[in-house]
Length: 75
Image (tube, rainbow, N blue to C red):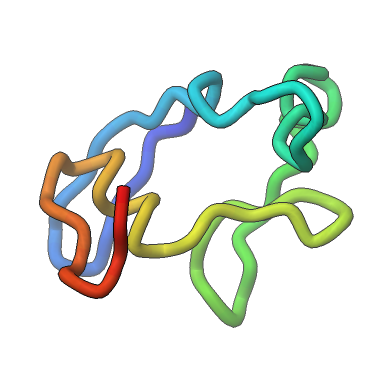
């Protein structure tokens, strides 16, 4: 779980366990030592992990704040 703060002042906690699905790149996040290797990607401003694993900024905002996804995205 990460505490996330956004430029618009909103913040919240995100439990990444919902993204950990067998056979996906996110499966690696199950390993706590790997999860702890996160860093903030300077180009997107979102948490990322080695191997170019990250979460889309829009999804991160939606899942953390409860705000709706942009119209052009499907959940």
